[in-house]
Length: 166
Image 1 (spheres, helix red, strand yellow):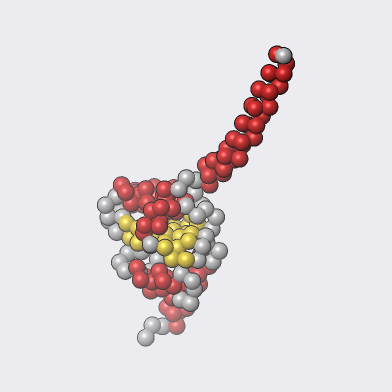
Image 2 (cartoon, rainbow, N blue to C red; image 1 turned 120 degrees about the horizontal axis):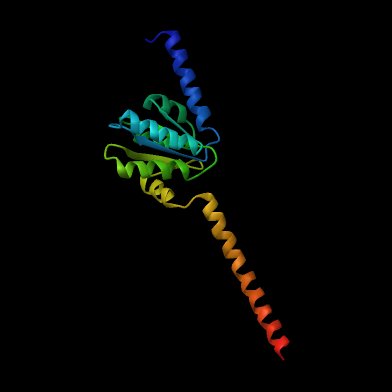
C-alpha cells in the first residue's frame, strides 16, 4: 500500500490533469517513444508558440482524470508512452503540429484525440491537421461574401458607363 504522501501527490497530479482538460476545445494523445531531446525541445517550442499545452502523462493518472467525463472512451488507447497536447482555443493547432511531426518521425505516432468533448480516432485527427488555420478560413469566408457584392458593383459601373456613352 502506498504511503499517504504518495497518494496525495498522485491526487494532485490527477487534479492538475483534470484542470488542463477543463475548457479544452481539442486534444491529441501521442506515442512519443524514440524521440530525442533536441527534437522534443523543438516540438515543445512549436506547440507552446501555438498556445498548446503539451506534457508527458502517466496512463493510470490520465485514466483517473477522465473517469466519468465525456472523453472517458480515450482510455482504450492508453498503453505505452503517452503525451497529451491540449488546446483551449484552437481546434486544429495540436493536430496540425503533431501530425506534421509524426509524418517526419517513424517512432512518433498519434494515438487518438478529442474534439469538443467527444473522442475522435486518428483518421479524424489527421483530417483536423489538414484544415487551414482559423485566419485562413475566415479570409476565405470573407472573400466568398465579398465576391457577389464586387460583381454587383462591376455590373452597376458597367451600366453607368454605358449610359454615360449614350
